[in-house]
Length: 261
Image (cartoon, rainbow, N blue to C red):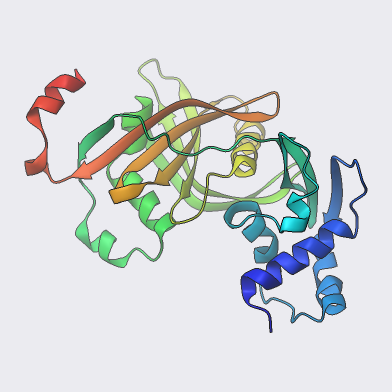
């Protein structure tokens, strides 16, 4: 049997070329096409069908044969297009990676050691670290509260989505904010498509509140990059980026603290 990543890519490749026509910029396919595709390829059907699509949306690149169809300056993404329905779509290349030239701000580490000891994966650990150290408050200058994590919900025109964590915020004027957060660790990269989903969710479910979408990314040596993201002309743009490093209180640089002023 093919290794799992190869199996997933073979399925995505078939789903793509079963519908792709030269010059196409977008086209729809359906989740229920995975099973017949697996049979046609002689591949054992994966236990988690959704993971086949999720892996290419957020974790691994498209197969080389699919990448070869991309015009210069454009790249394929997979969008949600309804219940059990997806869309291959060409978008302007718009990748978001942490910059390597930003100052890193030291923050006293308030993460309980017990949480660090039992975090099950990078994403869970990152969400917990952000929450316990109130990094969303520090980054946005708001008072925020975690409402729910791993929130599964539906968005009109997209279908079911999952938000890593959802915060509600308050500023000094009494204005309320809805703050969807996506967390990425390891080899995962910030999902442009996931950001768009989070923002569309906020627009539909919290129409009277301002949305401030956040992405958190683990960096080298445990540093954390936070991004505020927005949609402009259906493309994701970075509003602000900051880098933080959590350190024991006795290792804080007093001169640096003065410099932060």
